[in-house]
Amino acid sequence: MATSRFERPSAAPIVLLLPDVDADRIGYWQDQWAASRLDCMCIDMGAARRPDRNSWVTRLDQAIRGLDAPILLVGHGTGALTIAWWSELLGQEIEANVVGALLIAPPDPAAAEGDERMHAFAPLPRTILPFPSLVVASENDRAISIDRAFSVAREWGAGFARFGACGHFGTGDGLGAWPQGEQLLDSFIDLIETGPIRATRSDTTFFSGWLPQSDQSLRQLRR
Image (cartoon, rainbow, N blue to C red):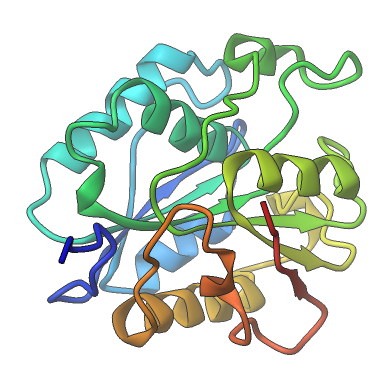
């Protein structure tokens, strides 16, 4: 019998945090997670205010290759796009090390009214992600509408978590350390460590029944 790629990790995963543009501001929740949690590490992406897709993908690839442990990726905004592009361009050789990804507020890089710095990440990758993943969206995100975020989740074969009015989940949106996001992360880690094996890429029942019961909800995606 064939063995699923998505076996339970033998050790707790290391969480690699990928920031959004302009994330070098005081109070960013990723920095607070890295300071308070032993399992979280921030990746230095270089030019935080002028991102380059190939440079960011390369830095992520180097960080993953430098770790001999299960890895959970948490990307915010541009960081989420970087994870999707890494999986499409470079991840085939070592993607088995990645046990899951939280993709927070991925912007639409082709949106005419969006941040022009995102054009370097266009077009949006459309390849189904080969590891369990969850797109997290806000109802009032200036970078992507809730409906467009749901479509992105479908394109990537990911689950979908809908938060309330959290803006773009940035430092100016009043989230502080974003404890609800940290609760989501812990739930995701628990699921990866003890939950059912995801046998196929399209088996989105992997995500049912575990999201925190505050203002977010999960829509199962059927392909």
